[in-house]
Length: 199
Image (cartoon, rainbow, N blue to C red; front, side, top):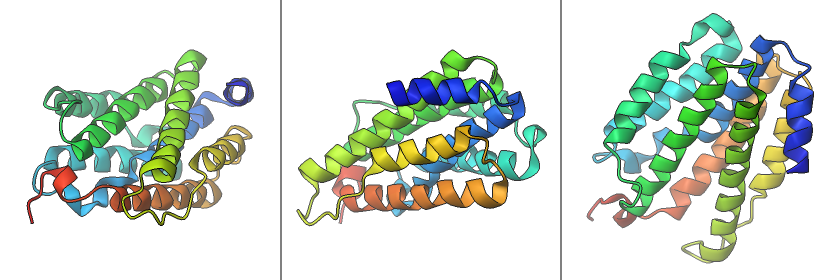
């Protein structure tokens, strides 16, 4: 928690627009697994919602604050969340967790001066990073997972973000690299059966 508290304190020194970019980078890191083939055919609405959210994060970094409307995205997310069962199939529960995460991050992007919301978004990101690292260590399907230290990587990227290193040419590749590792993990962890796809 100390690491997150320090990050929030550092973010307080940023302009509101830059704080929004910090939130946008969280969306880039954790919502980019929408390309996973297991979204079809059962989770197409969820795929579309996560794709829109991830793209909104990219657009905000590249084009600035006016490039995305958090309120419109939240309406889309809420609609999809209402259709979802958090106790559903394993891959469906994974998707649900990330939809909730995206909703909370959008809360912050819509109110970038509310540092409590930023702290909560950071906490949720850390929970996702730590949780997936533990999943890999404890329950990788084939037993040969090469550990990825998601929690350490998240901490490092977050630290660079809040230091104000937010030029799109630098910040986006940093978060997109994390996103690729994260999406690759999810693709390797879940089976077709977990997604409701019969062979």
